[in-house]
Length: 127
Image 1 (cartoon, rainbow, N blue to C red):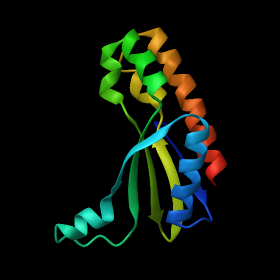
Image 2: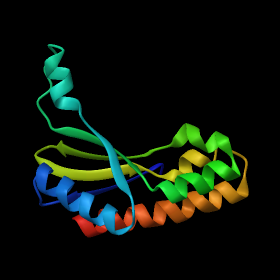
Image 3: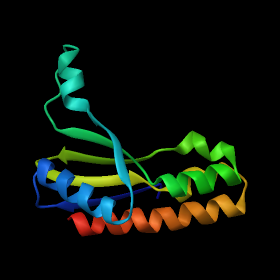
Image 4: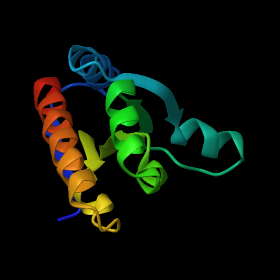
């Protein structure tokens, strides 16, 4: 499967706050947070479920992967979503290993596996 998704009993806000804390422990920062629901409603479209996209990055890891292969930049920064689905809060991400398969570079694939493992641990700590 191309993604990793978990469910939590936390509210959207609690899940995002918890996620930010666990990411910080792994030296990942949230570069940008996009509230899809607000943006769609701002554009006059009815969308009533919370959906947030967090773009996250660890500068040292980004430097390492870009130094190895600039094509990996197409997949940066990593995205983590926090959203509501049938009244439940979910946290998920596309797996870096699934995306980076498009680049035929074993070293970059190894980096992606390391990052994926660390991000999954961040998500697990957030539930």
